[in-house]
Image 1 (cartoon, rainbow, N blue to C red):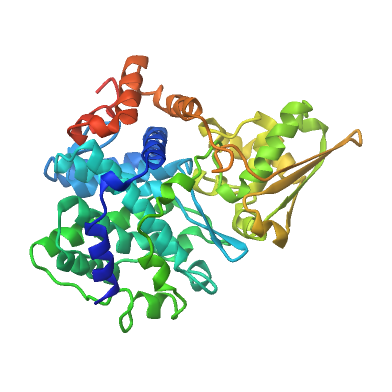
Image 2 (image 1 turned 90 degrees about the horizontal axis):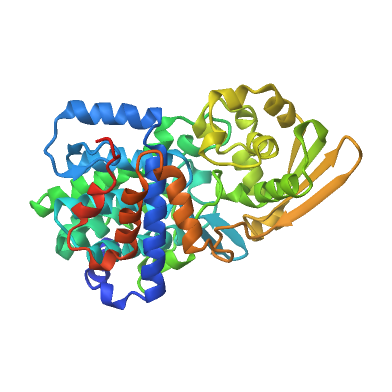
Length: 463
């Protein structure tokens, strides 16, 4: 039996009734957070371009595009909504502990646009949506847990490639596909789709394509599932076969037993909800800088130097020269230099901290030049822990270490904080009544009879 067939068999028996209540509650919290992030990214240039493409493509009206309310194909809705969710880099994240080292779990909430679009197209219930989300989280994390050795990034690939392997299984469960059909769907999507590391690597400026890495994998997965349902075949051994994923992409360094052990982990319980907009590995030191600036009323002109100590991975990922003076949003949210400077200037790191005017502001650029970034390998064991040490012109030294920033699984946001974060982004497009109805719908998702009702609430009020 192929790995894909084994996974398909386990996926087919995955059931809502087995999901612990705390996992159901966390699913609702993260869904609301993800919808807020989508609205936060609705007005971006990337979103505008994709919606223009969708409008011109004239596909069947199967699913709703968030914000505009445009009806399009399920495929196009996944692309448009997925780009919105990812734009701010404000959606959730996860970490994977391997030995004593933490590895990134990327942004598992990126599975949600596909689940919601398919849910609308097939009139699935809220319970079926919850089931699909929890399943997708388990598969997503398990797929990355299987990565051993130097990892995907060091080999030139991006971990969002996992979407081409896990999403056909999630979709297969949603649509009641057979094990054979799911096996083929994994083969079709996996053999024809992957994400190159250039989209998220040091020494390269980021672009809008960063926002559609996972959406494109979900797009491919839906198409593959539709083909497989009609009898189109794909290689059964896509994961473990000759020149398949493990051999070609991972060079043999992959523990498939970890992937096969996905069931019953309910990994969504450990997902982290972001409290600031930044790569999560930098949240420790950025939270420390924000707290110091506020507590001691440190003004930008008073700063002599800022020494940031963080994980080696963080310094490599957010401290390379290309990101020091960012020119766009995609790069700025991964620049520890810029984010540290803006934390002192604005004392917050939210959607309003990203604009060309901010990137070029003389005061921000002056502070960037005063930031020193140091990588401490010992902090890789405690990621996203970080230390900020601010020295003033008057000779005062303020130092703070933060191991668990707000939103971390060990320092979780309250429901009210999650709601407030959602409202801070949604209020630009919705009045209080609409926001309350959407929030109530999400927190009572298991009672929802048709996913289309939820998606309809994501249309801006003037539409």
